[in-house]
Length: 154
Image (cartoon, rainbow, N blue to C red; front, side):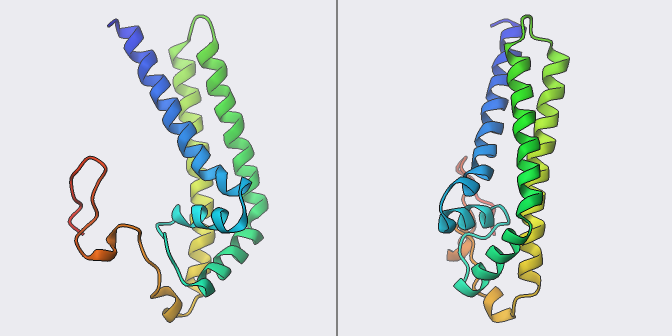
């Protein structure tokens, strides 16, 4: 396999990964309230929490919705820029790399905004509500299994 073919394959795989991540972040904005809230909160490391805490988080996310929608719009534009560069003939690797870099930055910005909102809601919640926060993997005390078969030992 030629070097160019390998680079293009790596770029395509990177784009697919970024699009998957973007879909994960954006799906909550397009689905019903329960799914939306659960997916957004999972970006902050919470898979389960008491209803009272989830209500607080939902209220905070709604209050910060405009900034998250703006971040989403920027991420969508960055994603389109990647597609444009991938369709260019010939592909300019430096421009494609720059488009990927911008997409990563915009994706990270959206994730950061969600985490800041969740953090603000959790900070002011009573300890008894926060005690009910659970991770999908770490509840059994056996550590978190990685997708590659290893364990984090937590």
